[in-house]
Image (cartoon, rainbow, N blue to C red; front, top):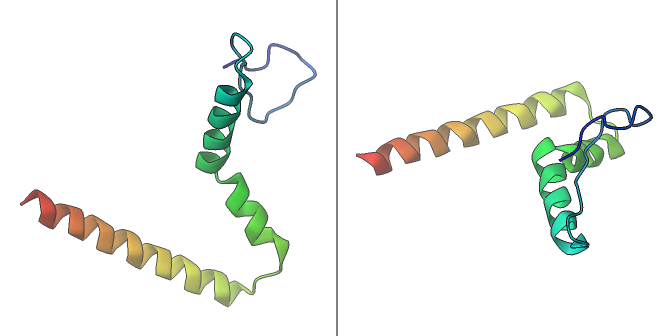
Length: 77
């Protein structure tokens, strides 16, 4: 991965194409985009959400994470 080799490039995700293998570089780029949350943020910003909706969704995500954590703990026992 090359970062800031060129001064004109500011931020963003970059992937180096090695040996002309564009498919592999593209798969790696898609993974990086998914992990960074860019796609989700674009979906979220597409339409306005009321603050109460955002709080409700955050609470649902927190509950889901907690259930997942508890399930993992039980599986380890």
